[in-house]
Amino acid sequence: MKARLHRPTPAALRQLASVLRDGGLVAIPTETVYGLAAHALDTKACRAIFRAKGRPAHDPLIVHVLDLAHAEELSDFNIAARKLTRAFWPGPLTLVLPKKPCVPGIVTSGGPTVALRSPAHPLARRLLKLAGVPLAAPSANPFTYISPTTAEHVRQGLGSRIPHILDGGPCPIGVESAVLDLSRSGRPRILRPGAISAEQIARVLKTKVTTVRRAGKKGVRLLAPGLLDKHYSPRTPLTMADSPRATGDGQAIILLRKPAGNILPGVYWLSRRGALAEIARNLYRVLREADAGGHRRIFVEKLPPTVGGIAAAINDRLRRAAAKR
Image (cartoon, rainbow, N blue to C red; front, side, top):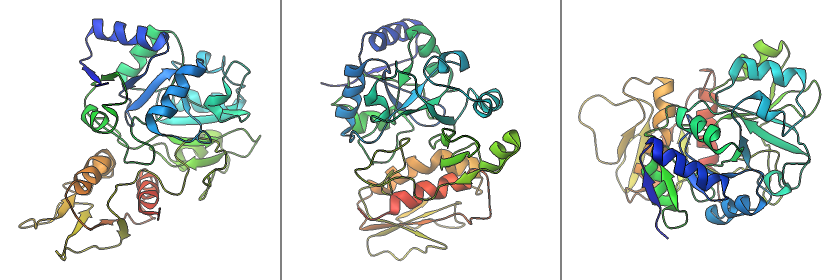
């Protein structure tokens, strides 16, 4: 099998919507990263996601829906969840809520909750509308490897395992959605940081929002994807550092901003001026470039924890990428 790359023409979107409705797999762009989409209420289709990614059954899937009305067909929404959907949907916020019986166990890893989000990317929304079904869509990459933010990244990782890739250009945010657990009444918990920060969520809910630092263990059912200690990882060993310096000797460094003067071999950067949004948008692309550079080890500069905003998500992804296998 060799994946066919589709441009987002009206005819291609209708074709891909039909593929999804009939139980096939399609890699699709979202505003965060590319997802490997399938009909979320079709057990066989969802099983194909796990098989293509090499994903373990204890790691559940995020279900993408068009809006709140569609989400409420799949889960029991509470007052807090409705407030957050009004504030942040469509957008990069995933809510974990009690599931309804129509959601297959394979989607939730057999658990009583389901992770839901309404994507903002216009192509993802168009496919949801055309297909008329909710879409399970984890990141479109081999399990635990660096997430894809372009169609080419998807082709490199899954091009021989899936039939269709929709090319929507680079993802504008570049890191996965924030995941918020609302399944425990009155106790909102961030399981995975994202572009929607704890501070933003707390302002809407007018209550304290905690962040779970260690949300998942290998082999144990997870509440949502992306929670394992080792994730988003290059094949080259990676180490986080406050101020990495180029030393040669087969080592690479990734800096937050472009260095002045001549750029030495093995030196990469995430942003020209250190802008957080640009760092997030370029993070996975640069990690992939460094991973393909033939280096023995990669050192990456971490953001100070006091920066706030999406910095928490960037450091979270780097921490998991640097975790020992």
